[in-house]
Length: 92
Image 1 (cartoon, rainbow, N blue to C red):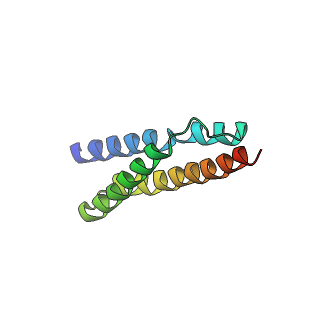
Image 2 (image 1 turned 30 degrees about the vertical axis):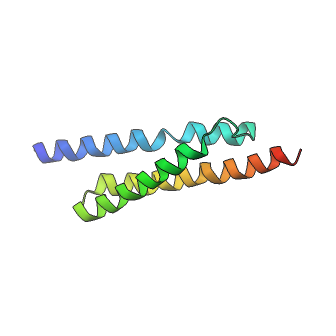
């Protein structure tokens, strides 16, 4: 029973930290601007997420692995949007 509760805690934590990126991506899409998004922070964060994916694989920790795969996709989406909208800002 305790192991199941710990697993549920892991999935709830993973869900909350994963969906935390969605509002930023939606705001970026709505405003078509990412000028306040730090590329340095996202580069460091994405590197850390990649390492969490490896950790999740090596330790067979499914909540860590699954959530970080999704987070990596969301973070890469934000990075792509930042590059796209920063390029558009410069060309104006």
